[in-house]
Image 1 (cartoon, rainbow, N blue to C red):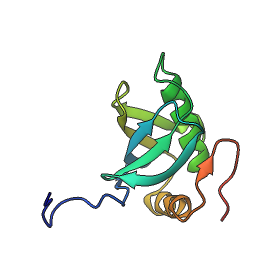
Image 2 (image 1 turned 135 degrees about the vertical axis):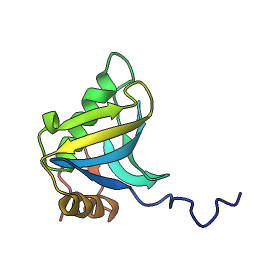
Image 3 (image 1 turned 120 degrees about the horizontal axis):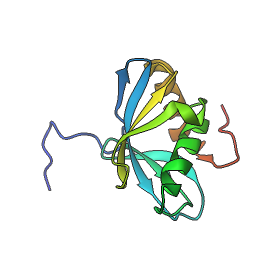
Length: 121
């Protein structure tokens, strides 16, 4: 299938600067064997969560894990769209675009962040 020259790269997470933070798309895989952040799929950051997609458990786990991955408080992570779907639009406050890109590079560079562990620099 030819996606054409304007097709988005499947291996790059698209970040957008917003007032006071950044916005990105996240592709959630609930009920995974472990919590982990890393990789990209169609411009979205892939996040694996052990939590089931029931009663907001996966969304709460997503906020905690992204907060840890981007070194911000979980309360700084807000789901803007897709609260009941696997693909979500997420705002992360208190981080600039350059810092967010650097933290993503560390995650994609083989230091996948698992719950309870810190990514090595």
